[in-house]
Length: 136
Image (cartoon, rainbow, N blue to C red; front, top):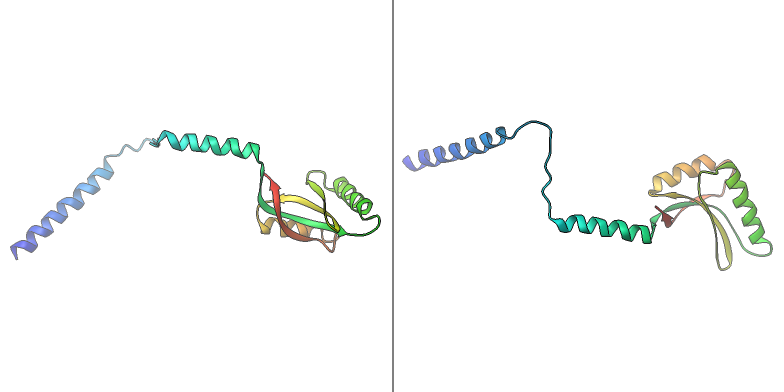
């Protein structure tokens, strides 16, 4: 029985000490971050790499694809029309045999791409979101 009482007292003292230690921290609103210098170096290296390769995985909305005669000129016309209506959204003309494609936007998530696709559905009823490399 004496063992249990001693064990309970020791536990109580240890718990009380932890509670007191937390109360002694000054509440002035400042936070001190203690980190290894290598973390800052790694973050700087990541920033430099991102500047050298600004592309990342994301989504775009494909508004046109076609093959055959005059498909390049039709793709260019669609891209020009889109740029006139949405100058703030990037548009990209690409060729992957045998199709010319026009894709728009730089969306990080599928939800953003679908939201924009719904916005332009009236003008581009056959548009759809696609996974693509985007510019950060």
